[in-house]
Image (cartoon, rainbow, N blue to C red):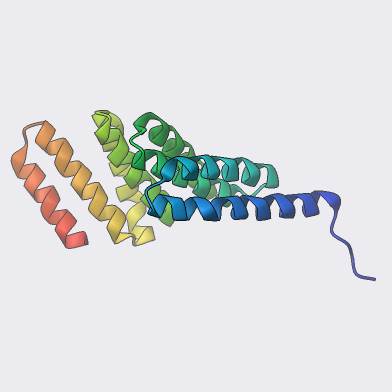
Length: 169
C-alpha cells in the first residue's frame, strides 16, 4: 500500500500552498501601485512560509514586502524587510536572489541617508554578482555608488559609476 504523508509534511505542504496563494494577489497589486495590501500579503506569506519550513519562499516574500514598502515610501519598513530577506538568502546560499536583494537594500539605505550601509550593501551585491550574472542588479549598484560619490563631492567617481551602470544595462 502507498505510504501516506505524515501529518507534519501534509501541514507544511498546506501552509506552503497557502503562502503562495496569498502572495500571488500581492504581486499584481504592486504592479498596479496599490502596494499597501501587497505588503500585508507578502508579510502574511512570509509567516506562512516560515511555518511550513519553506525558507526560500519566506525570504522571497520578505524581499517583496520590502519592495512594496519602498513603493509606498515607507523606507524604514522597506529597509527592515530587505535586511531580513537578504540575511535569509545569504544563509540559504541563494546568490542570484541575494545580489538583487542587496542591490535594493543599498538603494533604500542610500535613500534614507545611511551611506555606510548603502556602501556595504553595494559591496555585498558586487561580491555576489559574478556568480549571479544579474546585470540589472549591478546597474542599480553602480547608480547607488554614483549617488554616494556625488554626496561626497567626488564628481569624477560619480561619472565613472554612471558609465559602469550604462555598461551593465
